[in-house]
Each structure stands twice: as structure tokens, then as C-alpha cells.
Amino acid sequence: METSTYSTSIKAGSALIQTLSSSLYKNAYYVLDELISNSYDADATRVDINISQDEITIRDDGEGMDREGLENYLWLGYTEKQKDRKTKKFGRHTIGKFGIGKLSMHVICDKCSITTIRNGIERSLILDFEKILSHQGLSEEQIRVQEALTNEESGTKVQLVGIKKIIDPQKAFRRIARNMPLSPNFQVTVNGNLLRPEEIIKGKEFGIALNLPLTGLVNGKLIHSDSPLGEFAGVYIKVHGRTVNADDPDIFDLMNTIARPGTFIARLYAVIHADGLDDIVLATRNGFNEDSPKFIEFKDTILRRIREITGEIQRSQSREELEYEKKLLEDVVRHQIDTMLKGAELPDDFLARYSKRPDAEIVKKAIREIQERKQEHEERKKSRGESEEEEPPLRIIRIGRKRFKFELAPMGKEAYECVLDADKAIFYVNTDHPQYLFSRGEGSLPHHFRRVIIFEIARTISGDSLVDFVDQYQGMMLQDIAIKQA
Image 1 (cartoon, helix red, strand yellow):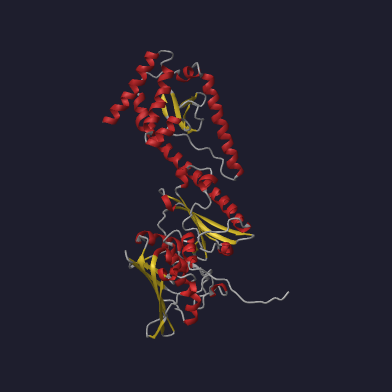
Image 2: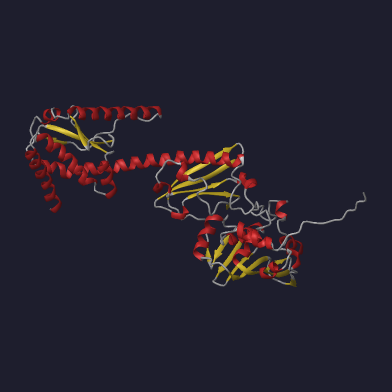
């Protein structure tokens, strides 16, 4: 059988631009990300962006492109950056490497003009996407390049005209500040406003510093914001200075992987630098290959660290809240309870009466559980090498001939709001009770303290008489009303 051979090649249809750009770059702000990345990789020290309704201009003072560089730029899926990931002037690790970022421009505009200067020669061209898409193949549209001598400094200007999607300058400002590797050696302005590395999130900071077998060095910080962050909450992963998951800060699905309320997670903001993930960044640089062993190791370790930090935050919050609530209780006891009791008939055998209440066994059981919790707490402190010193009870007041103390204690939501340890003469206010939690939420804890303490005292001194209880309780509470009106 007679055979023959001939040569052919892979061809790229013009529709590839539309197909890839619409599927890979769904967010119009990726256009700015890609163009700023090009300027960074060109060793620019300054990028000026001007955004209007009809036109967007990006100008940098980078090294510009010569004829070969411009030819390489027009290659789809090819870039010299794949050969050498370090820039010549500043030794920056390039943050673009796949050669498809230029597709993003079709998402946002009808035409793009590029003017670039290098070694005293200015080169300019226009990409008319309507004309390019009118052909069957990408190479059929002949793009004219004009060359001219110039005395201007090197750099590149990209103008996007025929804008198809609205770009909000303020949103662009925040996004660039959050996502790009800004520094004194790489400054960006938007409509004349100089951007700074985003530091708008205020709150308590916690460091992250790890050395992982596959990923290598990982460092960053987690901030527990002073207020909810809305769309900004989440974890931002930077690779060589650029945020990879800019539009997916919930990449770790914190709501379902950390046992914390949604309101708590809405205040978490983390920035993590992990250059070792560079080889698993997706071509669009807006995500990772999440099935890779490296990413799984990274995710599991970071989540473990976040759980440690969030646990520490909540323990700290609990301590701070408890100290604040102790102060409230002390103020109520000192300035109000003491005065409220002056109008009551307080018997000298108050403790004996309390011990003979019909529900005395229930109260004693609650006291035993309080003591057990205290013992467990002291043992945990001892295991951590912390001081075993017992915290002093709160304000002491006199009822009859006996002096009484007051403490806050977790007793369980089913327990009484307040109980008295008759042996030690200590009133315990239940911090787990639903009414306590409700009062905390609406800011009425002082009234809660007055009510539950006076209720216990009135119930004890009135015995089984409902009439006496009402008289005693109302008399003491009315005394408090007089205090408030004074």
C-alpha cells in the first residue's frame, strides 16, 4: 500500500477568545488584576489607573516591550515568564505566568490600544475584538504595529475603550489594595488616589507562622474585627504577593468547618502568604487545584491553626465579658441592693430559714455542681502551670447579723437564676440561665441582678406566705425605683 505524509498544525478559532474569557474571567475586576500584574512583572515602580464611564487607562513606568516582547505578548498561552520567574531589575518573582491574562480584556471592552516604549522606540497597536471575532481563526486578523522614535521614558499604557461592564472606582480601590503586592517600590493610584496595603480591618491580631512538609514556609495573620465585615470576611491567600482567591474568601467554608456562630465568623479576616503553592495556582490565578496533596495539607493545617486562634479569642472574650459583668454586679450590690434591704425586715436566722426551704436539696445540688466546676477549673489551670489562687468574691453586704458575698457562676440553663450557699453565705447568680443571657443581650444586667437577688431574699424571709413574699419583694423593688428617680 502506497503511503504519503503531509504536515498540519493545531489551529485556534477566534471564538476561543470569547469562550475562554467569559468562562475564566467572570468578574470584570480581574481585568485590573491582570494588567497590574503585567506592570509588576515588568519591574514598574508606579501604575496609574484612571477609570471613567467610557474608558479605562492603565499606565506604568516598567521596562516596556521591544519588538520580540510585543510578539510574545500576542501569543495566546505562551509567555517568557515561564522560563525565568525572576524579573531583571528588581528580582521580583513574577505573578503572571500563563499568557492568557490578555483574554480578560475582552470581558470588559470592545477595543484595547497598547502603547509601549523601550530603548527609545515607541510601539503601538489596537486590538479590535469585534474584528478579531469576525474571522474563523485568530491569526487571520492582521494587527498593525506602529513604531516611532521617542525621548520618553520606558513604560506601557493600555487603554480600554467601549466599556461593556461598569467598574466602580471605590470597589476597584479596595480590591487592588487587598489583592496586589503594594509597597514603596510598587505604588498604584486609582483616579489620582494613592493606594496603600490594605489595613482597614481593625481588631485583635493573631500571628500565623508554619513550616509545612509540602508547602514550606507559611506566614500571615488573622484579625478578629471590631465589627462584622460583610463580604470582606474570610481567608485571603497570597502567592508571591498577589491574592489568589480574591473572589472566594470563604475558600475554607469556615461556617461549616469551625464550630462558632455565624456572627463570630463574620468578623474573621485572615491574610496568609504561601509562596509554596505557586505550582498549584489555576491558570486564571483566581484559585487552586484543591485536590492536590499540597493544598489539602495547607488547608488542614491552616484550619487547625484558625480553630486554635478562634478558641483563644472566645476564651478571652469570655474572660473580658465576665470581668465586665462582675463589675456590674458589684456596682449593683454596693449602690442599690444594700439600700434596697434597709427597708426590709431581715431576720437574724436568715440562713437557717434558707436551709429549711422545701427545695433545699435542689439548691444544695446546684451548690455542689458549682464547687465541682470550680475544682475542675483549678485543675485545668494547674495543668497549664497557672496560679491556683482563688478569685475573691464580690462586694460583701450585711443581712441581719450575717455578712454575705456575691459571685457569678455557670450553673446550667435549667438551674435557678440565683441560689445561696448557706454554709459559706455566698449568693451565686447563674450566668447560663436564658434570662441572664437575654438581659446581657439587651443591656439590662443591672436590673437582672437586682431582681434575682431580691427575689431570693424575699422568698426566704417570707416563708410559705405568698402575701408576705409579694409585700417584701415589692417593697424592696420600690425602694430601688426611688433610687433611680433621685
